[in-house]
Image (cartoon, rainbow, N blue to C red):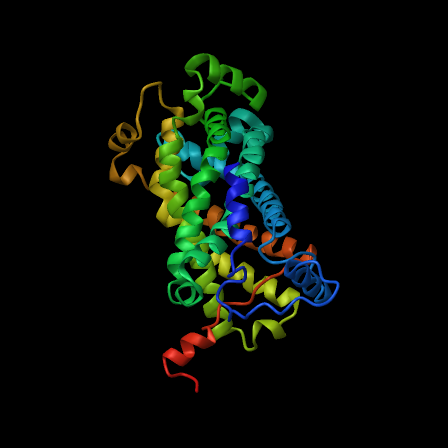
Length: 356
């Protein structure tokens, strides 16, 4: 019900295509059912498979999020496993290379895939909410503040929309994230998701799946705010100052290359901003019942909070770039509307004396 009401609010927005000049709706022609149908017909004539801001559009954005997050996070499970072990047991796993060597010696190549199932399912659910609801909130908040403010305060708009989306995304992710860390960092606890879930429930009840939710918010919300805001602004700057021609003149392949570059830049900043909370999440899900995020942070100390940063920068930079590339590629493949970088509305240009 909550997601449905959010989508309906965004769908009814007169600013369905943020940061572009608004125009009055044309009068209905003879035989036309609604103005809404006119818009859909126009979108279809331009080759788009759906109307920007429609329920169909938001659903496809959610699908793109499932594909991009589920696949990319599962691909980097071996590096994520070593990173988590570096964070929770630095005495045993002294470096990335040493972490891989110890893991291979103890568990073989199969051991590097530990936690793939909760990773795939958890981050697929997270991707659905992260990308799908980001698009919903971005349109909805744009409607609330108006077209001119949407342009002037677009970075704040990106930050607010991404933070709102990630709040719900983490609720979907938390149980699988807890199971993943338990499998990866607690020797002998469980080797598969089917083994881990009943054991966790029997030992700590439902609290086992959500005890890491607050530190997860602390990690993921700043990460996602940086991920979306930095990506959107970097993309805008790349087209303005680096790419030698306007986006509409670039081929789809060229646009995807720019998307990947902007995504990698955003990913590096994401990793740095969210790393201390990521370390707390890893340690907390391994810790005994009753431990709190504050207890874990005090135990680790300032230097301990930054353990495993370099492998995480490599992992998150690559992962974030790949996610944006896949997400944009899904939009291209499904012929979804892909609005260009924001431009100053004509009304604002007149107010600022930039046009007659």
